[in-house]
Image 1 (cartoon, rainbow, N blue to C red):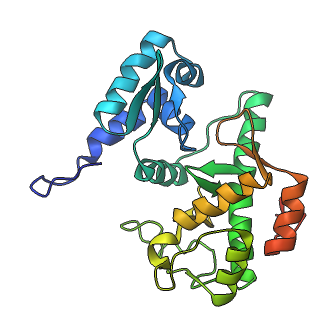
Image 2 (image 1 turned 30 degrees about the vertical axis):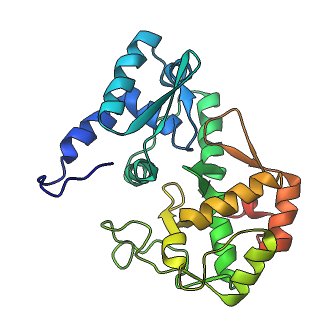
Image 3 (image 1 turned 135 degrees about the vertical axis):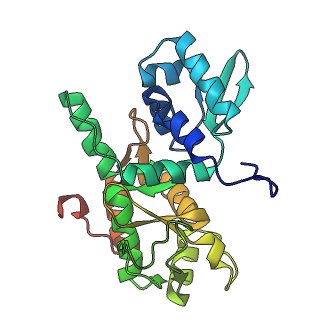
Length: 255
């Protein structure tokens, strides 16, 4: 998003009003995994007609929350940049849960909390469990993976209040795993984290989090599902995460 040095304070009310509409909020959340979707699919996700969704999408594009590109006769929409996903994650942390009115809705809510993508990286219980394993195994240092609301997780600089760093052991292990890592000393921009809205702990974000997630998809450890943002850990992934990073194989049974 463009920020002009001569402009005044942030117009929070304008963006909050846009996101505060339930239809637009559902559109944004449907796109929170970083993928591009056509208008018709977004209308279905939001539960509105094609003519209704068009107006909402236009407003989101005009506000630079979404970008649009044409492929053939269809227009595809995606979040404008990762900062939009970060804002959605922050709002989700302070939002009450939606009431569960059906078995299908309850099943989806459980699946989202179990394992999902947050823009381009892994989140949910699986995401925070992987982050904890990287810390416990000595691959990352500088923090404990927990959300310390008053101390270090600064709202003014989300994902940077705790200075996570790769250890030499972590650099070796992740290189062997197939990741291209920044030069020593360059991790500050590569290693970010999010405070996971459902677990209230840190999950790995930034370029390193995205690269690690992409690698798990490439290896078939993670599979996408027909539910937006929800991912499934395969049996190969369960064993691979345990053997490579020390993630407990019964991670989803733990409280």
